[in-house]
Length: 211
Image (cartoon, rainbow, N blue to C red):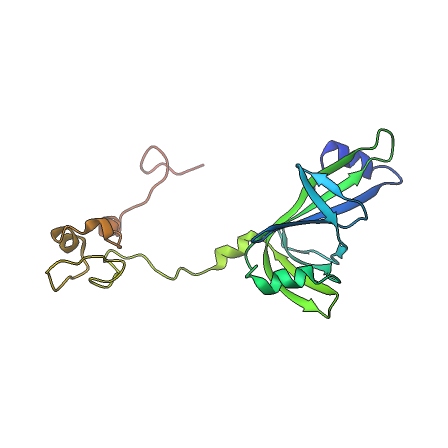
């Protein structure tokens, strides 16, 4: 269950209340929209009226939102030009939830609802685009393209190595790199061999299990 601040919760408990959503897309430029027909300022920034909607939120066992699709009105082709003009994947997207106080004095209360990254997009005809927002934790599924090792992965005298002396060989070890006075550009983990098969323990005293 999502927790709302006291002011928003008070409005939601009323029989009649008016709510809205704000959308912020942090692309090469930041685009801010709201889904009602009046301009809204939040955090000193203007959220312009632009129709958008989303049907459902896909969640996980821990109740966190994994992904959802937002349909954005694009009659003026502004969003299609943005999506086609840059790579928007993995850029930050934030959805805010807000309510308009129905009793005097009129006030607007807003809080962040969902934060994620752009997972993908598609254009639907000439008047609508769909943007998929996914949880930032999906980035943990990325595989490392450069596994760490005790030896240097750089090509001798290559761009990363930078060595330009008279020597003609290197065995990719730290000792050889130091002999060439090029250890500042050593690309391996020099201390990795020293921790192989070492016992890793937690706590201040060895042998005391954590409780």
